[in-house]
Length: 119
Image (cartoon, rainbow, N blue to C red; front, side, top):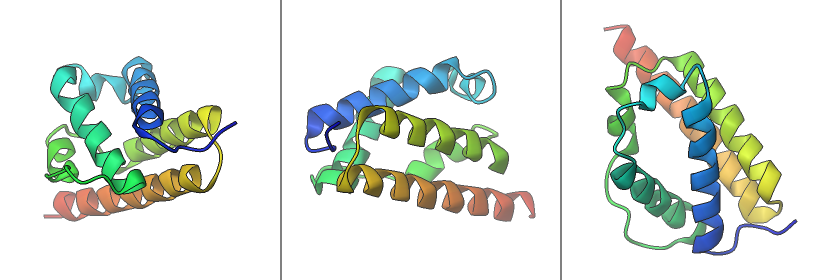
């Protein structure tokens, strides 16, 4: 298996991941009203920036997810699906970086949601 090395690899990762998200009976419903024509390119730009140092992503990915009533345990499912998608398609240094970043995001989102729920 190859590592994530280019935009096409990230496109495959993001498209495959969100296919799983849409089918998941627990977290899929949170995305039922998602404008995929807008969301997928933004998520791809985010991962291009994170994994390939490609400039262009602007925005706050937390804010676009915080209004969906997603709770901390849902990010465990999100992370499992993401890691599964990476591991099914890639291996190597950048693939590990993708998983590590997803773990960071999951922890950060969960923490922020807990702070918001506590107010």
